[in-house]
Image 1: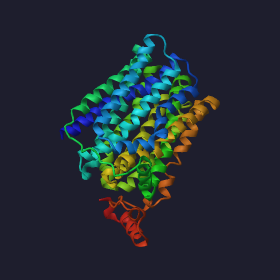
Image 2: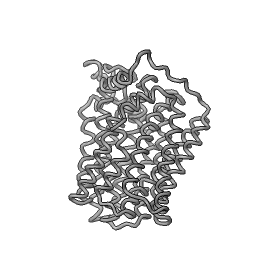
Image 3: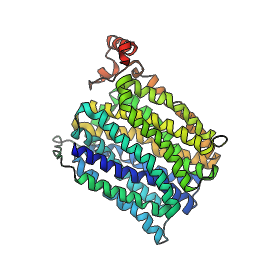
Image 4: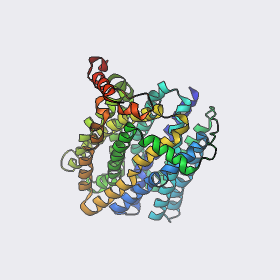
Length: 429
């Protein structure tokens, strides 16, 4: 389908630029402005603060708008904001205050883009193709994670960190151009008569919080994202100041780790089909989480290679988990609530990112980057606990019914059937 291919191309361009900046922006702070660890953590927090500050109303606003034009406008805002960094560097007026401002602006635009993007996909694909479609999008994102940091590190070494950020601005411009080529038209959403923003936000909250499986997915993902933010806030400081890596080597380490995410995107669909969508949500984080312990160990043995291996396995599990749970959410939710459902979950799950970034920066500043990574790695061992304590541990597949009763198991009989299905030999076929 041509429209889906254009959506993929736009995702590829935007994600590539964003992952170049994943390396370049912290290096601007560390190398160009000599920022301490806490300021680097604060910069990471600024990038994700919008999910906590406007995550809930964003969903209601997105449900009132056509998704495609909104994504194009968000790309334009992000391109202009990122382009201001190399411009300020050339003029020799770049400051940490500008980096914080750019991070906040791009974060706000990203909230609207991501909520609209996840809500737009079901307009292009039928329900039975959502796992495959999300797998393709995760493949694109993971490919950008593999290539972007390595190229970003090389650009930083060649051009300097501020000029390398221009690749992100270019990526957002290309994304907007690809999205403009999509021919599929959306009907303009018709708000319910007399509906208020507060009532619409409340409807999205009730939909999510009233369903046990969505609640446990929110808790699990929120904890995982908190710990991921601790990692993001400290890994550049650790790689540069503890392991002594040059910018190009930092990019290569992050790219090597992201290769696990690419593998996860490729195997997520087949694994879900063979083992069951519910099982793979649990197993993906249960099996891969302990490899986070390789991060703090890398100072004493293995160095950059061990750090990359730990990241690769953890990212593999995270991507498999994401493909399964996002596809479940999209199939479960009625179209008129997609924006609010996605935004509510983003608020609950991504609102932990700025808190994790601040915690990581504070830990690294007070006790050192290695200690911060050790705390982060131990935390990853706890990520599967909400899933293990939920009805999901007894299921092979996730329910199609959108009612809370269907998700909870609807009584002893349904729970017994779920256990029987999970334990039967046919469940692995």
